[in-house]
Image (cartoon, rainbow, N blue to C red):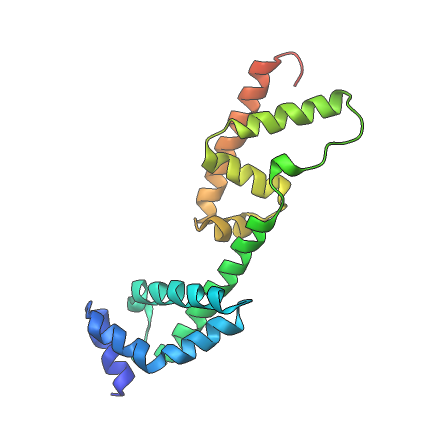
Length: 176
């Protein structure tokens, strides 16, 4: 059994010293992977930290201790991709910064009512509405961005749509 495999087996039994030894052996490689997937060294450090936390939490899913390096590099690559997706969502213009259409007719009034209704929602519901309808993200992309499962995204969107419908009907029951 290799040194890495032996350390993996110990780390699986919650031996933090063994896990730290794994990071001492392979940390440079993992940091290089993090740097390759990010824009700067600060982001790389954060991706490295996030990746190592994911590795620690999911070490039990590693089938063979001898595959630790390849598997952990993959985990760090996923952490870098997830961070890039989250940053893309964060950099997107918020709902309130969208330019208003030139006309101020009925469609502008409806848009304002919808924006106000979304703003009044609880944050988790407003977030999925904004990401789906205004950000154009898929359910899977939203799940990655908010670090939840696709079924959770689906559930939140269903609740948010129902709340939006009720709110708009209460404001003007004859209009929608």
